[in-house]
Image (cartoon, rainbow, N blue to C red):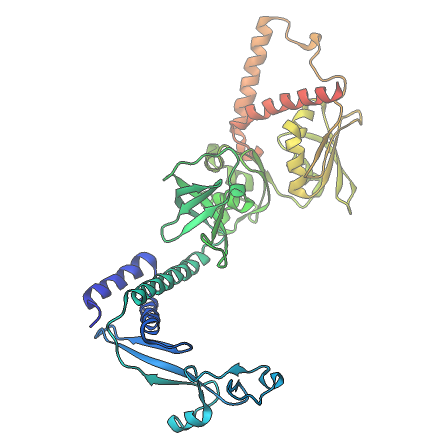
Length: 449
């Protein structure tokens, strides 16, 4: 007996529980290892050796396999009368590997071409050091292959879902995440810009692809794809998972800002309020997971002009005209105090709105002057109209008036925070939007100068 069967069965059970590798796969690996060791120590070139392991008794039986052939499939290398044309498409006959059909029929009368005939071999238990190393390598190789196969089967059902793991190591900007039974890779380009990770830190990401042909980690993760944001909302909003509310479109600049268009199949359910949650709890949770990424949520409508106006939120627009429906070009008119919000910092707001809907959006002032244009990829910011700042006559004249205006401003911010279900923004985003508006105004003035 070559094995301690009690230890062997314990190891088989442990592999099955921890690695998900079936006992049959491990036994198959052991048989391959024995066959490789036998051939290394006692076999001849071209032989096909097979081993059969009995887990009940611990015995191993060896056999040599030969393939049934005839003159149509092989040629005799000792026949000098054969031309190259006669040998074309045929295999060189090897008596250790082949058996002619005439001889095979003497052993098994109903044998056919390409059948296998097995010949028992003498049992061996004494294998040399090299043969033992060969057996070990074969076992490890087969177990790794079985483990990989089990992981592909397990995680194949999770593609498109969020998985959780811990940072194992860093390598050339890529993160390797330990998911328990497998190691996944979070490529540098799929990481949110600015995020930093520590070894052992918990990470959530979208499993977007399984590549069985890849060397090393074959599970591919992402935190920048639109589907990751959608799956995060599904975990927060049961209505999404149930299908009552749908996310029609998403566009992201990972780590900075996103726009989400949601639609409700039930008129009694507000899709924006569903995603925002009571006091913005749901959207705040998603924002926190995305490293502070601001999220604008608007209600989807099939009215394209109205949808363009909503996509430019938080800005309020005066008018939307689709001037070229075929090429998807729209003209948007905004009041002077909404210009900076409509364009956004560095043109971010109009760029995201254009990308969300697949439109080229041109923004104009009330006087008909072009302010900015974006096709979703690039933004062209043009000159700001001359009257961009508050005149001295419009500024507060006394400290009392200034304080009063400040108090009114605070009240308006509180009202904006209480109406989140309608607007689809975080309460914290209001100050951010105002800062972006100021930055955009400065950029527009610089462009003019």
